[in-house]
Length: 165
Image (cartoon, rainbow, N blue to C red; front, side, top):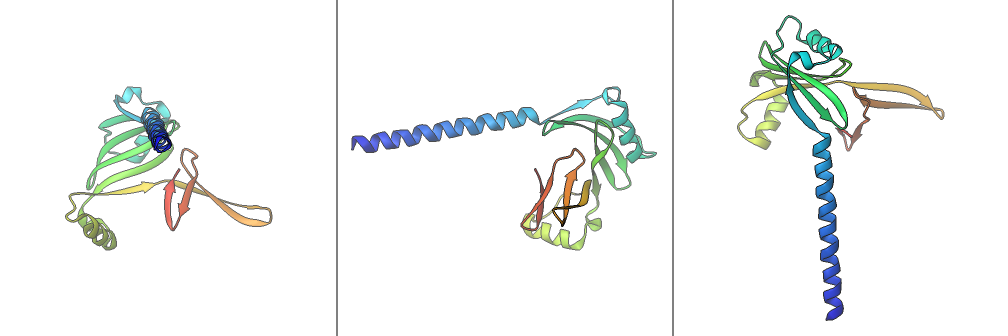
């Protein structure tokens, strides 16, 4: 009986330690990922040039600085033909992604059907364009390829679905 209490106590102690470590990792992740509104004057010149290039003649109305996975990005918003458009660029002005509001009718039928099946009534749709770079090369006599996000993180495909690291 005494031995069982010791084992159970040890297991509870280990579980508490694991939860503490997990919570600490979540805190570190949150500290590593952040977003804050900034003024246009706070956006580096190259990042601003990248945002303006995508916006074209549209006026950029909001700006944010984001830190994700230890990389700094800048976000700019403007009104597009169907609603709000958000553009995310690196400090160097390279486009990472574009998110644009679209009417439900502009979403592909397969997407609408799958979304309605899983979520029910849909309030809004956004089209997200993610910029990826595929590199083809030969190594050890075999054709190979790598895929990277704009900030050079590997982009992996697992079980037919793609995910960022």
